[in-house]
Amino acid sequence: MRGEGERSCLSEVTAPCAVWTRCKELFGEGMASREDKAQSAHRVLRISQLDALELNKALEQLVWSQVTQCFHGFQPGLLARFEPELKALLWLFLWRFTVYSKNATVGQSVLNIQYKNDFSTTLRYQPPSKNQKLWYAACTIGGKWLEERCYDLFRNHHLASFGKAKQCLNFMVGLVQLGSLINFLIFLQKGKFATLTERLLGIRSVFCKPQHVREVGFEYMNRELLWHGFAEFLIFLLPLINTQKLKAKLSSWCIPLAGAPNGDSSLASSGKQCSLCGEWPTMPHTIGCEHIFCYYCVKSSFLFDMFFTCPKCGAEVHSVQPLKSGIEVSEVNAL
Image (cartoon, rainbow, N blue to C red; front, side, top):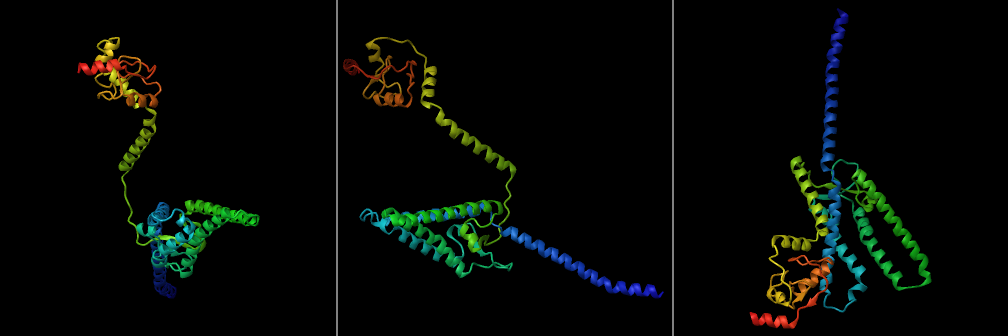
């Protein structure tokens, strides 16, 4: 009886502990699952990061084209002297009101993306620090300016003393390009840090707001893929088809010949319209058959297709010759 009482007491004491432990496990698993879901929901797609980079490039080209239009009426070559510095000022102005103030570039703002400090250990969103933003401007804007200015310097001064410096600069640029290539391959695998600058500074792209899952039916996708493939096939096939020759062949089949009169009289009788355009022949010419063509019609057709044939009778082009003046006069008098 005593042993049974002790076991019942122990069970009463350990039961709440077991329940509490189980609750902690379930609560911890729920928190971990929610954190994983939150991270997966805020994870930026690779295509979105690449689209943001392309939008940034398009914006820079648009702004620079507008600036060059302002100097359209000035002396030619005036803008070329200060082009690297002017570009750097423009990009610095854009950086000030995008990355520095809003933690995102223009392309990222369009796609609901912003930069996050990846060095932060907190689960909450932590914007990039001021030093990271300054180093971002130095690497992106300062690096472009330094490359363009050094290139102009080495191009304008053909001195032997710049030979080693030019080789060192080319070597450094090659290393940066190699690092960018390796970073891009890692980005394609991991999906983080689209540029080398982002990886070195520890800033990565995250969604400002959780994105809704898009559901696209397989029937719609199959239809779009089918039409896309069919359109690409037509774009590849159409330039290989000689439409003008095919049209001439069809017209020769649809319009049977009622007889082939010979001589200059046949030329005069059939000289009221061009056999290609159907209008009154301008500078009438012949190709060796009884039909008459405009000079520009037959010459352009012959240059386009060296195996051009008459659309009426199918005769090959022997020579493009002007119509005799006597036939033209008789034709005008007949009208």
